[in-house]
Amino acid sequence: MSERAQGNGRLLAVLGAVYALAPLAIDMYLPGLPALSHGLHASASQGQLTLTACLLGLGVGQVYAGPLSDARGRRGPLLGGMIAFTLASAACAIAPSIWALVALRFAEGLAGAVGMVICLAVIRDSFEGHSAARGFALLILVSGTAPVVAPLLGAEILHLTSWRGMFVGLAAVGGVMSVAVAGSLPETLPPGARQPAGFAHAVRTLAALFRDRRFTPYAAIFALMFGAMFAYIAGSAFVLEDIYGLSPTLYSVVFAANAAGLVTLAQLGRRLGARAGAARLLRAGLTLSALGAAGTLVVAVTHAGLAFAIVSFAALIAANGLNVPNSAALALDHQGERAGSASALLGLGQFTLGAAVAPLVGLAGAHTMVPMALVIAACAAIAVAIQLALGRR
Image 1 (tube, helix red, strand yellow):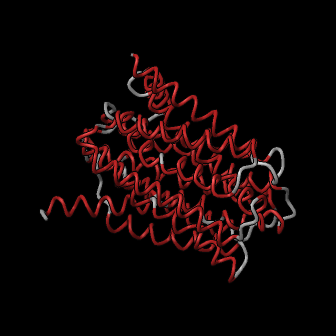
Image 2 (tube, one colour):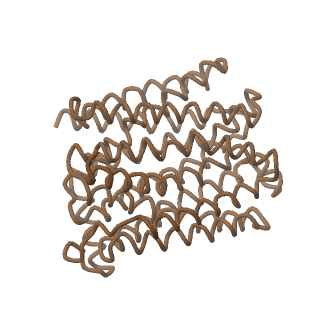
Image 3 (tube, helix red, strand yellow):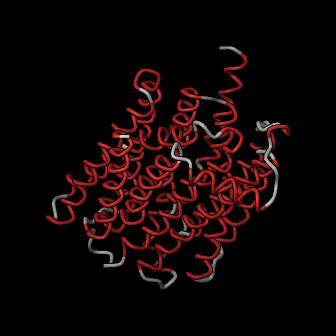
């Protein structure tokens, strides 16, 4: 293997680990979400607000992190974000009430957003075209281990301690990532390629991106597919544990298996990318998402058995192994030096929509999955409609 290939491999490994922090923060405490709600004397919907707050922080944080990295470079802001994530996670572990935890989860999301947006920008700095799509797919593949491991790790922590121990674990991981960034991540945006700093320039850049028809349709698909997945993330613990009676450990196994499907399709898409192309792989992923969404809606309406529910969830989540890297690659393909701002808008749409849908799935209580199924079906239907419109254009 050439020295350059080895360097690229190390870069992607660090980026994948940093990018995994956000799904780790989202997924590790899911098995303990019912226990967290009970322990803080909160309802199911209030407990889901801790997820909403984190998602909202992940979305809002990218609005400042993207332009900041375009103006100041990638390395310094990323290191600051990792340190802030570590401190916020430690504070979550000692939250005295549900509302304090909601506020701290928002802060944790703000810090985690820095890692997500800058990782995407570094990929765009370092690779182009199909190589960028492969980089995004490999990033998803590496970071996809977090949803596989996180719920299982969370369930094991619950056997040893309370849900607070999960946030202690997140703080420890954040500390390790801070050291990794400080020691291994190079600066990928040279001073001559940086954008002017300032609020006015950032607003002009974001406005130009909103008007860019090569960016906005794929950014919308990216957000909608994450919206469907976050509806599943917010509601699956209550559906599988409260409705179907699975234990937290069995729930974690199902959740991990679905995440493994996402990783498998991301790896398959990475291998097929040169031959099939990002647009074709995205169409295939959206088709599978539509099938999974339709199956979830059928389960909710007909009260079908556990096996049908698990298969529908598996199709929905695995499809994002194709949807996420390819929609991101298509959206960022022409963005050049404003890749940080473009990545920020991707993240803003992704997590703002996720924050909006997460509490909706619990509005009817913990013993029905109809709201979750309707949210998932709506997101998938709109994404498919956008893709069909792109095909006609």
